Amino acid sequence: MTTLQEAQASIRRVLRDHGRLTTDPEKLPADADLAQCGMTSNARVNVMLALEGEFEVEFPEYMVRRNVFRSIASIERALRELIAD
Image (cartoon, rainbow, N blue to C red; front, side):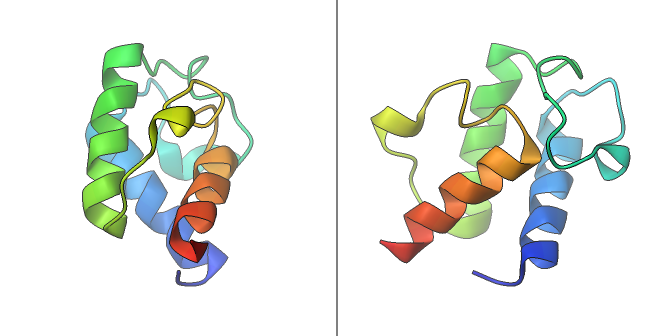
């Protein structure tokens, strides 16, 4: 994966385009709770699919959980795990 800053920039772009957040993802701290920022379960699925396309990965069933998509930081950790495999 690219640098942490590049990965987070890509994640923020996906969140902006698919997350339906009430707050601009560029202004969110990496550990901000995305559900509290307006991301619904439907938007979470859209974000997951967009991330799969962006990073050319597939989230396994055990990762399709709210806690994986809780924050920018948790998404970035999951992506690093997937890419390392």
